[in-house]
Image 1 (cartoon, rainbow, N blue to C red):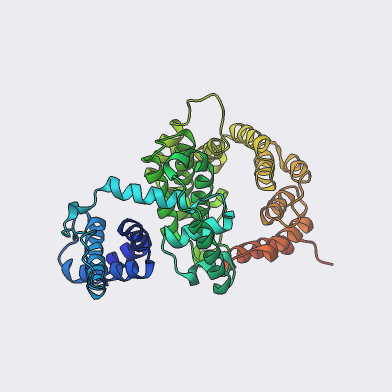
Image 2 (image 1 turned 90 degrees about the vertical axis):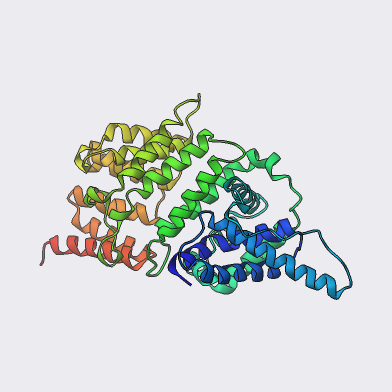
Length: 407
């Protein structure tokens, strides 16, 4: 299978299988899966020179024909005649983009059923919407394949009992959950959880693509959807500069800003501008504005710290978490000095929070406390989930260790 066809399979096979099983009324996912697999086998031969313009439409039409033929054979064996599913010519026009968006929307809102836990929703989304294998899911979540299989099985049983929910009518009330899940999928792509996992830029792109489908969907470009897209794109723009050789973390103040994706920054700022109307300020809007503030700064030294501190204060008032508080402490430290930043940091309970220890190490080092900085960075290294992060924090600890006076 060609590289392009393999990418198409990873991205769309699960969606095609689910859409085909539901539309065909077969109720048998295994047969739908076999039909989709056969469609990709045929594509490998028939797309030798070039893929059709609407490749998804072609694949879906061929898979549906395979399923129809299979149903007819089974019906003949039972002595039945069935014209319920007429064959569809495998033409590029067989499935219009809007129709495929409709299928994706149904899957997105189905996966994000509030009856599932957030981890269950994210795991199911990564499996069903993004086509991740069980092994990859286990690695991302830092658990066993058996645990992932159980989690997916529980999710399927839960959703099977709720398939009659009219998704379009309930889409507004599920939107917040959908946004959380899509951003969690995005985060899985740009923040590897454990081991030596590389950044999964395919997941980053997939999460943004699904958010774009959501924007074109039943609810239209709402402020919350625009804010999510702004945050995703402004964050994704900096990904090329976030990691150095061997996957080692590169902090914001040391990143090569010429590597930032300016087209994504432009798109992200456009989405952010679309959130300006409205009487209330959304937490997602504040997060996107923070990312935008960094994105438009020509250099770290030219960052608008007054604006950042104000944005973080507003975000912390809306979402009092250690994560937001730690970022507020760092912004305060850069604006008002390390001692001021430490005062904010010490008001938080971040003993088991890696960024809290990493920020403490940075601020203590700037305050001249090499011993405290070394201890904080060593604790951050111990909490790091990836080898690249651990190596970075260990290196920072060693820098301060060498600066300590020797007896």
